[in-house]
Amino acid sequence: MRDRPGISDRVGIGDRPGIGDRLARRFEAVAPRAALITFVCGGDPSPELTPAILDALVAGGADIIELGMPFSDPMADGPSIQAGNLRALGAGVTLAKLLAIVAAFRGRDSDTPVILMGYVNPVLAYGPDRFARDAAAAGLDGVILVDLPPEEADEVAPQLGAHGLHLIRLATPTTDARRLPAVLAGASGFLYHVAVAGITGANSAAEAEVAAAVGRLKAATRLPVAVGFGVRTPEQAAAIAAHADAVVVGSAIVDLVGAAAARGANDIPGEVAAFVASLAAAVRAAPRRLAA
Image 1 (tube, rainbow, N blue to C red):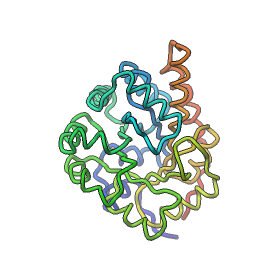
Image 2: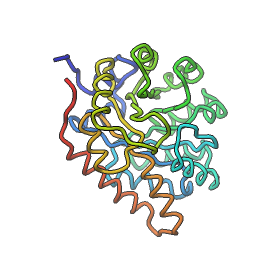
Image 3: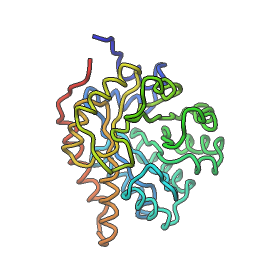
């Protein structure tokens, strides 16, 4: 059996030990079960309601939060998150407003990690140095920039690292053995495995495919492996949680928010909390079948 260090030894930059931050503590705290990572579009359906939605995610049982940076051309996202982006942009959200929302959340919750997920253009427009400084000051834990290839990461990675922010990389079903070292070089926090080729929320991967992919990735890195894209139901979340260190659910939550806003629901955060609670219960009950 391969020697497998503790989670806290697997959360740092690349294969170096962790830096003792919120992500490391959270993965350590929930082990041996999988963590539940939930995604919402920042500012959807309005910047004013986003703080209550973030609190609802935590109340429902989310272990880690991904907050989407709305962008006008979200090329990796399907119709659900595209619509969430448009609602947020229409409501006047900006990157500066999102960082203020994170800072306010951090005043209420000092433990739950928050990852900003989106595209590199808003960060470049904001200014990488300024973004890293302001994001760290707000209490952000890291970023996922889905359209930033490793070869171009020098545009933002040094600034993020200088302020203690994780740059979380993505591996896909087409990331082969030759490509994987480039993806892992400088990767930090956890590795996000995209379970299906294509856009968010479109399809679901078979459990056997996920298990094989997670085993392959764990053989190459000490980083925790999170699996997302196409995970929409508690049953699907439980199947992923049996094999991965974390399971990511996004489009289903964004759809819930959009539908509730469209019908003028009085308690969108309450609906979010109830759905997340169903996901959390499934993840916590999932039997573990981690690869050796």
